[in-house]
Amino acid sequence: MSSELGHDCVIVGAGLAGLACARTLHHAGRRVAVVEASSRVGGRVSTDDVEGFRVDRGFQVYLDAYPEGRRQLDHKRLDLGRFAAGAIIAEGSRLMRIADPWRRPAEAIGGLFQGVVSVSDGLKIAQLRSQVLARLRADDLGDQRRGDTDVSTRDELLRRGFSREVIRRFFEPFFGGVFLERELATSSRIFEFTFAMFALGSGCLPAGGMAAIPQQLAEGLPAGAVHLETPAVAVEPGTVRLANGRTLTARSIVVATTFDAAVSLLPGRIDSAAASRTWKGTKLVAFAANRSPLAGPRLLVVADPRDARGPAGPIDNLTVPSDVAAGYAPRGESLVTVSVRSDWHGDGGVEEAIRQQASQWFGGQALDWRHLTTIDVPKSLPDERPQARAQRPHASLGDGLFLCGDHLTTASINGALASGRLCAEAVLASA
Ligand SMILES: Cc1cc2nc3c(=O)[nH]c(=O)nc-3n(C[C@H](O)[C@H](O)[C@H](O)COP(=O)(O)OP(=O)(O)OC[C@H]3O[C@@H](n4cnc5c(N)ncnc54)[C@H](O)[C@@H]3O)c2cc1C
Image (cartoon, rainbow, N blue to C red; front, side, top):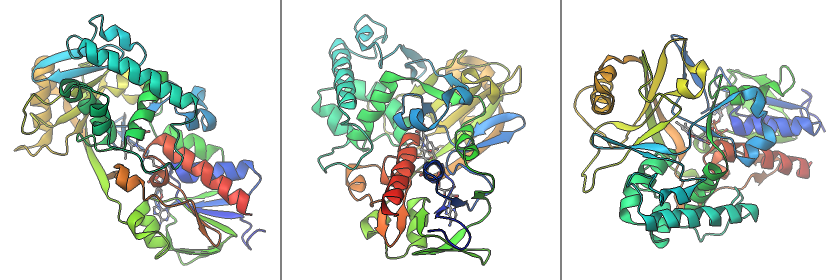
């Protein structure tokens, strides 16, 4: 049954989840309208043009092994540039290279970890790899709701017998950057899934910037289906009230916003434990450089020195997106981006502190980096500790009302795409 406006379903929010939901419904022959508060699609996946540089709003990578990405996106058209496997680990003024812990962990034992990882830890990485891949094949690592037997990533690493040294030097800086927290309090299920994705594929950036991902999804919708700058102010069964005074009606309504926006649109309908979830934030600082300090598609992460009381500087991780995908910088220039540690409280400006810290690895060239922009993203990822994930709401709220978004699955591109598709399937099953 269609509404008087000809929609079977109205979707509030054009982030990845809302777009994936709309696309699945559209492919099933349903007429959809998507209302989006901001002036662009993509939500937390967006890219700014700053003086000809493509600056993603917060450092993000797309993993080309993501099962939902493979199902829903055209990788070829995204023209993905790939990061080299492994990472450069900075400890004090020293740089160490980890070759490829994901695909060839045994090489750790041959010395390619340059002393970062002991033989015993290298063997445990190899065992972790084969176990998570076996569980992935058995469909035991997906985004579906699971029992409450989950533990934190740190507890899981300790249970597996990893040394505190490899946790400090590798797992904390690498996965701390992925989870946006170095305590490694994030669910071990998310850790294992992410580990499997790195083992099967590469971290990537689309040539057009991360925003090319939601743009591709939106291009798959009929013209006029997405209404930008159209915030919803209230949602009730069958009705979406808009800030512009109009009301849209449809048999099914999907709220595909962040969890806190969903709570205010649907007062009393979301369990209070799920509604009180908190956010993790991050900050990105972008610079223009005459040449790339990394000279290749690499990621540099910073390990805390042993017994450190706090970070030695603001840099959490540093990369050169224009080495990964050429479209990120004008010809002849390099884009350097730095994620800033949330626990850095140094004196003075963060840009100068970054230049100073980077100059111990790259010499005087870092002092000449030209600041382009600083982007604060206080609401980057919902709390992903096991106890917070256990309270995730269900997609179907009853009365034709549905929820989707990364807060129902995992805080990732894969999680958002999966949640949108699964929500659309629930809508189709209900109608
Ligand atoms: C800095 C950062 C780094 C990340 N790094 C990675 C990474 O490396 N790899 C990875 O896989 N994932 C990463 N993620 C996570 C990933 O980007 C998110 O999980 C995903 O984009 C969430 O999509 P979503 O559709 O659930 O929510 P959102 O993108 O938040 O979409 C919600 C949409 O709803 C709209 N909206 C809100 N209120 C209203 C209203 N009242 N009316 C209409 N519209 C409304 C918003 O404007 C927004 O467009 C990162 C995220 C951030 C921010």
